Length: 194
Length: 391
Image (cartoon, rainbow over all chains, first blue to last red; front, side):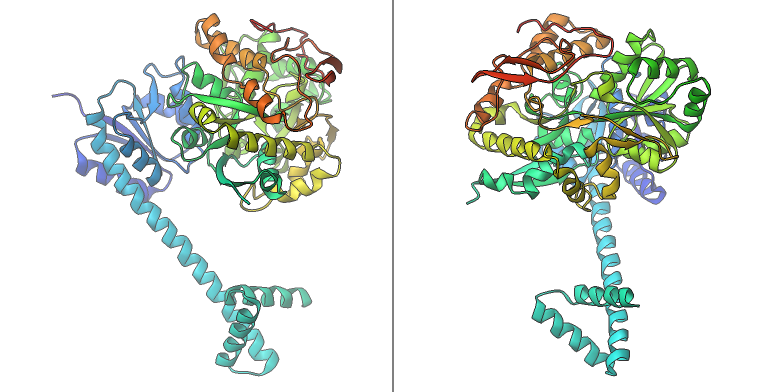
């Protein structure tokens, strides 16, 4: 029975880190640490001497891990980004999902696979949530903008809400633009004119 | 007629300008290609995007493909530099607190004397001197190692050069994680703008002609698609020529400032492009001719000797065999491909593909393919000359 693999998850968002840790626990018996602060990342990782480091591809801090890949670097054991030449699909899936895994050189791919699989599943879910959140935010912003534009039209032209919206929609269609864009232009122009 | 769309990875930096301009100003379309620019969050990720075939070409730190050829970092995929994208363009800065100590010690922040600036830094910094660079394999790191070693501060033993992503450099300085940095624009200017740093020296005060970024491709792609690659090289070369015109910096700064590119105010990007840098929060300005060069003096020619210089620096530091490192490094800068691509243009091509690095202290006429051409100064601040294994 070999010692459990130690894994470091680099993730500033606490809730997200917890979920990743949970899914890794389900995948196997691992010794897991979370690092949330990007400062001194290489030093902290060096102190913990992990077998695997998982980090979001979107994180610019990923470059700090490159130091660990230096042959004469601070770490005694060389670290490489997870690349399994025999399983290009897995590497590709990891990149697609937005997860970078740094793995200590010489570790058997079969020991890493369940970790990467669990991380991929979790990262995919987050990517979806991130997209949904961004979309929702945008929709909300647009809704607010349209409401303000409607309010302005109702006041300026003495029309009711439905008519104001119809006016916005007609203008948008005539100009080949989106209603939200026409509303934004109106609000900006009104702001400029005082 | 667009023959093909090439996806190209880049990092949001001022020296990504030739790629952005090639796309925005129609130089790509002139070559019947479309460039699909993909912004990357980190150098390791742009390198991996290229290695795994997610992009065809990339904006890359000049030492990255050389390091990959020496087996340092990366995924083992051979990469080639088919053109230099920019020469110089880095800035070295220090924390305001260190700057104050250096000023009190009599340093004038003239921003042009590497020896004086280095001596002041060494005299007033705590030990070990902690410096941030964007990536372990970067011209930033090479310049710092070269500069400090030449001034008698043995690197890497007595300096701690660590990786800090450019966008976090100002934060690391403020948090006291580092005392100084060497970074590409606009991040030096951003540290000044945020009131946390003072600029000490432009990179070209250490080496007058340092290849900073290259256009990198997978070596197997270079062999498989010579025609498409030729179009890309020509489009980028024309973009560089346009960038070198006196009227271009203002428009270029506007293009780069767009949200999909750097997403930062154009007046900050303008500083590097015009060579007029604000070095301190008090608004002191310094003019640096050739702060970043995209075209003049055959800036984009990938000299075999430049790659060899980089390879020898890396080999010396990591204990690799020097002879085989020199050979592997030379093969990475593909002056052969560059020549072939630019032959149909009016670009002047040097007769040789390698030169003594550091031998020219002023503009000098040399043999070109069609006659004579001029090369600019390429000297190191300490006057040393690097002689490549073959010219």
